[in-house]
Amino acid sequence: MWEAIKRWFDPAEARAVGETPDYRFSLANERTFLAWLRTALALVGGGLAAAQFLPPLPMGHLREVIAIALLLLGGLVAVRAVDHWARTERAIRLGAELPASRFPAVLALTVGAGALLLVVAVLVRAVGAG
View 1 (tube, rainbow, N blue to C red):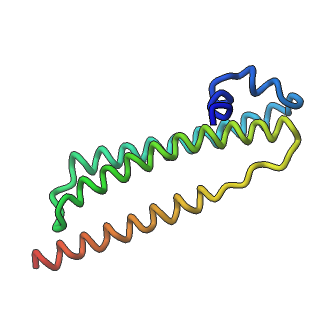
View 2: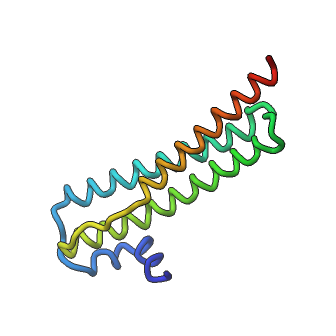
């Protein structure tokens, strides 16, 4: 684990492996990394917005659960982004197959399930108010 973390922060470590790739591949990898960071920031922003602006929901502490889930998911996406960037950069330098990841599918299903739960909460509130 510490070796993986060292690769995240040590540019010399990344350059010590394999051959220097076409810079376009490294830049594409970096753009993907930055897209994942934008996703992480959006999740963190959503968590903060939920904590501050959502009205109390019909189920006890649901607002706080939503906020904490979004904040944790945002942090997880950020850490996963840097790990995937480092593994992909290493694979590019070694001319190896790019690392496969189930994380995008898991993230999409998690966000979809969360949205479905929010729809249920909104419907429960609407029916209860009506």
